[in-house]
Figure 1 (cartoon, rainbow, N blue to C red):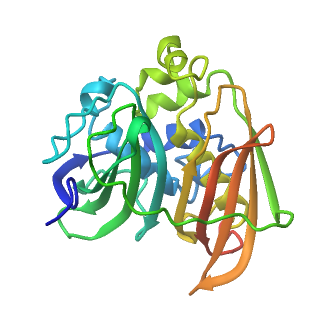
Figure 2: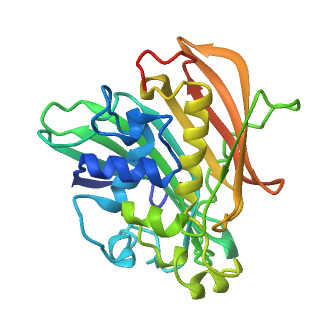
Length: 306
């Protein structure tokens, strides 16, 4: 008999995006004019940054602001008590890039096909829902990106559910990193990033962050995640989306607007085909905010003039 919440289908949802959405996303995670392939639609090569797919579950087909709590009301899952979306944070994300996403969905019919992988009771800390979303061309059936995420519903545990499997760890090597990439966020970073479609009030107003012990608004965890992806792809993969095969990390601590993100990157020298395994951590003032970072990247020189 399956455990409560194990392998529960959630159906599919249409998603759309414009070139303008791809441009906004790239700029919102700190990409500048030294990477025109991501920030200038008239460049010889204009591409969506590969982790743009992280925003699609929030955006769906909308171009207007939506209510975050209504959009992310937890699904009814047999055997699992009703959960609230009022106090949720990301636990970790992993992505597998199967095909390069286009800079716009125009002319194609894309959808996210979703399922609950498992629901885990972490006691007084809360409940974790692990889900999988696959970005699919509905006409051809071709899969583009697989996203697996762990959402933590704080303080909503102790219902007698399974504890869940032990996570796979990807510790950083105990040596100096091969690459260090720093990015100073701004006071407006969360206000700009939310315009991609993630309108959680935790990143704007004072009350949610104070009630959770953060002291006020914090930057989206996925902002930090996407900034780390940019650091890895720019420094190891030379800003070519085709050079990123997998990317994953766990969220360890909040980031506040104005913090400087320091991503330390290690090349392991181990390959899966053309892709080399990379480990990384992201720090703020020496404290890890992203841990167990792992990526598969094809080291390569830029082939186009940017």
